[in-house]
Length: 144
Image (tube, rainbow, N blue to C red; front, side, top):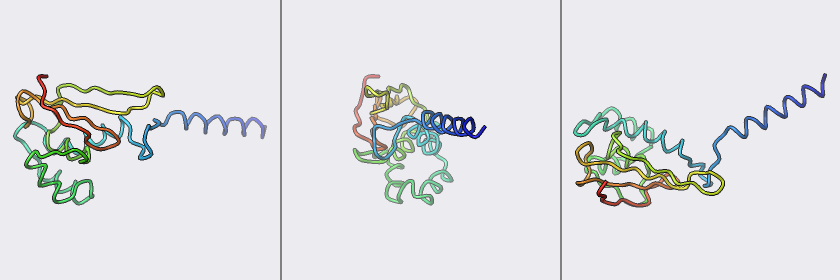
């Protein structure tokens, strides 16, 4: 009976470990953590031209963004090295396209998000923002 219990405990621990998304980075950044930032920070700008100040206050008070970063969100000034939260708050929830790149182990290494100017406050015709390890790694004006 005790052996069966030990086997079940061991199996349950192995199953728990395999269900957690692994990360290509020491920070633990995955596509899931990027989507969490998208949901939390992108809700500041749900649609083009609409901002929710309560969300920005929450992002700053919980230290997801600094006061300076919050001001840059207002100006849509996203730079390489910025946290993904800043980009999602600046450009909002209305993504046109998302591309995920993975390594051989199946771990997300980069995620690119494209916004169009008719739906988001980005330069026309659109802007692609690439994220890696929780940071903005590039921004590029696109043709879609």
